[in-house]
Image (cartoon, one colour):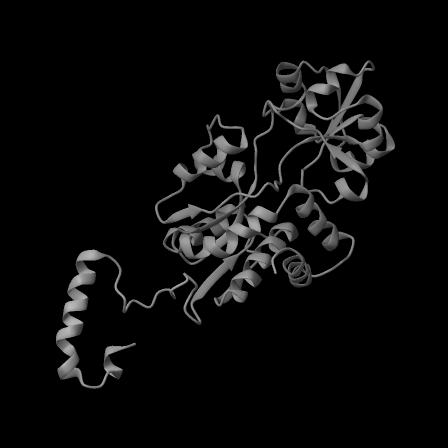
Length: 304
């Protein structure tokens, strides 16, 4: 209730003065209108949601946007901005309030020499590495990172669940991936050092998945959110020794809005599994659905 709308101001002024004095000593102001009693935003509070110029990232951003609209926020979308050099200044200066990011890659942006690799370590260091005014909400299980992947038939024939299981395969294994993989720390040398798995390397470039399915290579370097993991019936091998940098989906937010946004977005991250993200990407690439339609369907099925 606003003071300008009160009647009998002369009678009520002393009471109000006492109440205001108490709240100044004891905590929040009962006349403050930033949030309702249950923590929900006041009608029409604005929030800007951003996304990279990448269909998978835009789908996640649209899920955030629609869920915030359902919660009463007035949402502005700034999608397909570009890469980090383009949108990071907007996150830092508060022009964008929330955006889906990826823990490992974002940590390396701020701390290029980080040694963190496991999901929890990366997330913890990222929280500390962010500039003042920025924060991260809960991370999702879903990730978009390098992996070593095999066909389901090959996994079942050789009883493969993790990368280390490849050491049990009797034949000489061929690893496929982009040319630069050969020199990467998680390439053939890292695979041998970390898991004791020795492979031949084949530079497959843009046809890596096709070569894997055709049997030209036995193991392939595939990103964990690639929709072909589902459509081609592939298996991502577990990486318990963290050969690859964990890069889970995580919302980056304006720190001043973290609590409010977290109430709406954290339940989304809790539901966004690796399998769920791949499924969303399949709906885009195979189903040819828009990000808006995909987001609406997913929210209706997962967060009533």
